[in-house]
Image (cartoon, rainbow, N blue to C red):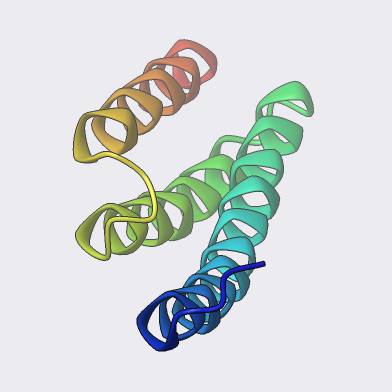
Length: 88
């Protein structure tokens, strides 16, 4: 581990950021999983509600730089396409 005062501070900051990012990434995984479960059950209303929540969580994570903005857009688009497929 580092010995310089500034390096120690950076280490503390990285631990805080890691904890914050882990919470956000876990939330992303859970909301996306909820959409996928609803799609497998072919429950359109449930899938639409879950998609709305998931897109909100993904956008928030992208805004806070937990994930890249294009990754959030891509994941939302793929989920939307899957929900549209069962809605037909």
